[in-house]
Length: 121
Image (cartoon, rainbow, N blue to C red; front, top):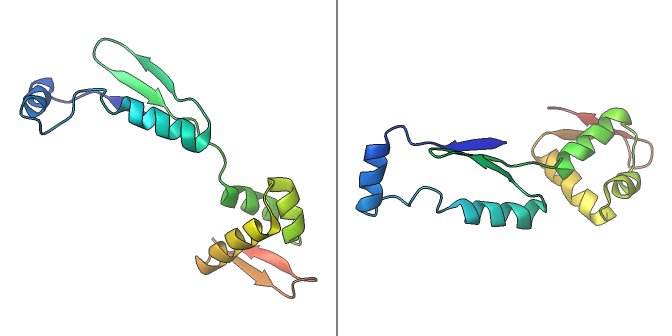
């Protein structure tokens, strides 16, 4: 993910900053960067020039995406196996599976021991 800080009309942007209806250009960078590092433990990449900044926010694969990928590979995979591969507890996996079922993303076909998962969306 990336974003640019380049006002379409620098004169209007300056007026809004002057009357304190907008922040100065770049004043929110530290908040975004610190929050991103704290949440994802990844450093955003900052590039720029005199009149623009480009920030690229690297992302990690979300737990739900990892679960879906593993289920696509092996629909019979157990919660225990999911937990071992992803690095969560079985309760953590159970939480995500229930949430995904509630959203209509996953469906369990058959019993807990002999069944399999079906991806609906």
